[in-house]
Image (tube, rainbow, N blue to C red):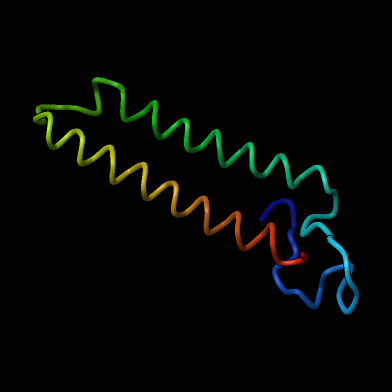
Length: 89
């Protein structure tokens, strides 16, 4: 939200016309936003691989927790990306 993206299609620079526009004031933020989401997913994966996250859990519990964390992070990232990157297209 710091980058002040467009959240309503009526606020897009290309509203009423055709073509693609960015939801951000600078089109470079589209790529930066995706890179931040990918870094967040990578951080979740790394966190799940750290032994401290396994604290007295069995292999099944560790795997279930890791799958749940990665799926949740992936779902949130995809929902954010889909909403912000397609609002003006």
